[in-house]
Image 1 (cartoon, rainbow, N blue to C red):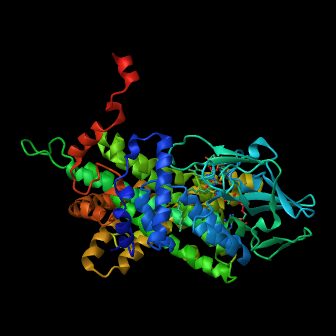
Image 2 (cartoon, helix red, strand yellow; image 1 turned 180 degrees about the vertical axis):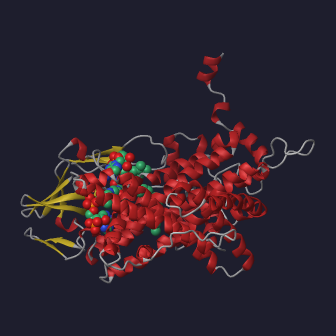
Image 3 (cartoon, rainbow, N blue to C red; image 1 turned 90 degrees about the horizontal axis):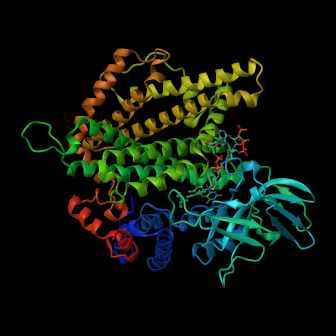
Length: 621
Ligand SMILES: CCCCCCCCCC/C=C\CCCCCC(=O)SCCNC(=O)CCNC(=O)[C@H](O)C(C)(C)COP(=O)(O)OP(=O)(O)OC[C@H]1O[C@@H](n2cnc3c(N)ncnc32)[C@H](O)[C@@H]1OP(=O)(O)O
Ligand SMILES: Cc1cc2nc3c(=O)[nH]c(=O)nc-3n(C[C@H](O)[C@H](O)[C@H](O)COP(=O)(O)OP(=O)(O)OC[C@H]3O[C@@H](n4cnc5c(N)ncnc54)[C@H](O)[C@@H]3O)c2cc1C
């Protein structure tokens, strides 16, 4: 129960639902069929929520994991962005008006921000909301082609409501980006309301079950009461008032989803891919290790272990980091609600950094798992292509990863600058105020503390050097913006080093907290492997300033290899411990019962290309 907490009862309930457990095979469907199938599941899910009294978000999440395996449904943007934004940015009155309807799914909403011309640069968005005191309405308009809203999930066909981010204009003055609740479709006919041009943006790399859409406003009026007014208000006469609070509060929905993505997308995606690849590697036998002996399980090849066990260690690390990220989000968000906003910049930085770092690592890791499964990994039957195309979306949505690393770096530069001026940092960056030893203390024991210290040293040095380089670029005549751009590769690497250290530290703290000695020993091995692989893969960073010497690097390599053999006997158990049901994995290679070949054969026979089909037959005859 290291992972699940209270999840199992809800998973079991969901598995009892025939529609979720044994529906038609996703792989044999067209995009439209996939979308329709997901809608049928959404409707059934909603009925189940009512039947089983599922109100709590966490309970619903467990249920969703079975109902929508390895895909995002239109409920994702509704419950992950629409409802949280209403709750966080709405006044009490507005929350009372919309949240109960949304929670009962009487209205379905999405988060409508990105436009054809701009996604990353939120200040560059062009949709306008102009207040008219005569009618007491905001008039929403898309003044240019590039201002057409583009991408929001569920917008294409499903949602009848949305939160639209638009520039507020009153009396010709631009007050910046604000959130507006907009009804998009008739609640009776489901047709788009007059003044709106909308539809689906077409097929994508993944996300087949979501109708990401476009929306063009043609002078579309909404009542004054539809601007979310917790932090800023527009009075009837057009007077604008705002609380003296951080203007970045309107970016709150993005912080929330980024904080959740670490666990929900990166942690879950990589853990599933490792489960499939490691179970399959214990089933698959190939070649010879020794002459005239049975073919070995491919998991017994050291190279296979070298591919997969570091990813297994990474999956555990990302999972634990995701859980920690969620805790931090809810803690800081509570502080903010009570008026203490001091930790908002740190929350923004760590959620941006970890979202980017973990989704990139997971995306790369899932693809490596696929390669490690040979030919059968390339088949849709492995389940890995679906896991990959959906998880890798996390590198782009909710802030493209490079841009998110740069946001994290910006915070690190501010903190480092403050330290130089005598300020004491705290929280995730407190190490920037410490004296960091210049020589590595790693010995063949590889204590978790000494490993974490190595990552601390690397992060602190890279942040220091990025800051000094920035200063040098400015001192040599570049303006601050050009200096930032000329330093941006170095800055992203410093942010990655910070996130890497954070992840190692979280893993170390989890290991220390485990009471069962046997479990602790096994987790310690994984944590060591994670850290040692991190050192080896980035060895230049550790050697550059003489922190790590060649002898130590050799020790790192030796220990890494010996850990592979130590982890081998527990590898399958370590993926079983994630407790994914076969329905959640959606993989023939990763089946719990290991009955891979028989089921691959059955599956291939069902493929639609094997059905009698006139045109194909005529063409081939
Ligand atoms: C229980 C339910 C669970 C549900 C879980 C869901 C799980 C997920 C499953 C998947 C579901 C759905 C999938 C799809 C969802 C995808 C949805 C979207 O993609 S919505 C669109 C997202 N768009 C973006 O993320 C855009 C990225 N861009 C930005 O955020 C901003 O433009 C920027 C941060 C890059 C820059 O903003 P800007 O205003 O230009 O700010 P500056 O760079 O000038 O910085 C000024 C200053 O502000 C600080 N800052 C910036 N952002 C924030 C923030 N969010 N909070 C706090 N502070 C912020 C920045 O650090 C600077 O600070 P200084 O002190 O001045 O340095
Ligand atoms: C599956 C999916 C679901 C989505 N769902 C939603 C949704 O529900 N609602 C919604 O509003 N949006 C949604 N989006 C849109 C998404 O949020 C944006 O695509 C994302 O924020 C990236 O912005 P962009 O497309 O403008 O990328 P761009 O900014 O055009 O990125 C292109 C390249 O430019 C680089 N770049 C851009 N700016 C900088 C910079 N300042 N410094 C350095 N490099 C830079 C990037 O690193 C990247 O390499 C979704 C997108 C996807 C893929």
